[in-house]
Length: 104
Image (tube, rainbow, N blue to C red):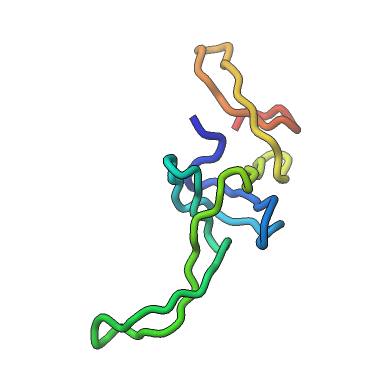
């Protein structure tokens, strides 16, 4: 079980995009990387493959390491560390914000 999941809002804590926020589009478990919307953009040269498609230089997102991301808590509205605990009611494993102790 990972601390960050798809469609959650995260903040970059290290690297060239430090401080930027974005939504997680995809997570690659094998390489421990996530694709975040609008973060870690690079220029890519794209060739025209069809007549109606244009070629040129386009900006695309590339995956960023999960260790460089922090989840934004919905209650305290800031990037915070995430922990795991066992739910007393049904015995399931849940994530919680270590700042406000709210279950995510």
